[in-house]
Picture 1 (tube, rainbow, N blue to C red):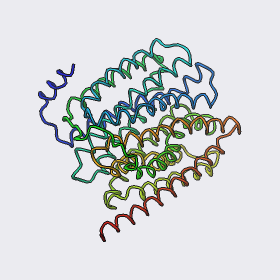
Picture 2: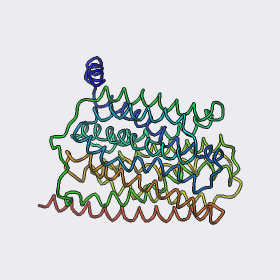
Picture 3: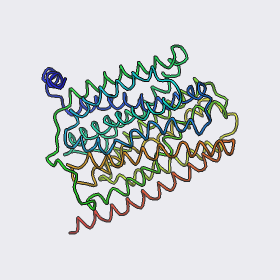
Picture 4: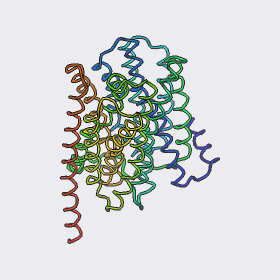
Length: 407
């Protein structure tokens, strides 16, 4: 099959970075359509298996823990094999696992399969990030990485709008079949068009001190991801139960939040390039924006126009989702370029650790208080803490840059 991959690239010819940037975005869109689509399916799985909010959170955790478990390993493979070979081999594994979900019964077994599928899906962000980071190594990276990472909110938005309709009309089995087909399509094409990229250094450095700068993007990302996954996991339930919107209206609001997050990733990436690569300062602003919009959600009257709710969710998405590409770029730029895959894999692992921890915790808070307000307020405090840490890291980054210029 790898000979077929080489033949396909020969047929397509050399692909310029701007074009495989597009395919990288579509590849990430396809992966996220599955990864966060499973979260959207939580509402229907909850109905099927009579789940509480904590158990709905575990649906998110199962997939996230799978991605987290393998992400560092996938990052190392992206450095050594190159993103082309890694993605091609992983595509067939993830497609078979997605198809196998059609025959799995029982909530526990479904969680196990989501975990295994998540392990294979982590090859997608590691391959795409490594490819784009390398292709744009002599240019500003913030905006290109933001465009690639736009595939995350785009895939989540499509999942929020499309999957409820498919489940209602055709059932969960049809969703799993769709997962398999689009994973093969988007990732197969992307693995064919990107060039061979391999690191000149084949081993991870033995001295862990080389990776001390990664502590700041890791801490900030761990905290910031709470907002992203709370929004994705509980928007449908909150708007349906508390705001009394239909599932269709709730799905469109969630989709607009994802669109806001996607535009935010491009906009904030561009701003960080203009600020000479000071990514943490821009991430700090996204944390302030996200926490501010959560305060607006808490203060909204019981009855407000639907367009206002959509607008609030759009801006909330910008703040709680728009930071992700910046954190990965920040991590990759903190180490030597040949170790960028490992750095992004490590921080990506921390991101998915947070995505596995926060939804069940905040879901438990909802179950305990019988209301969403406490969870929203807790989330606002988490984002403010993340913003403060990012601002501190940005000040240190600026100080080090000035010292380098003086020396």
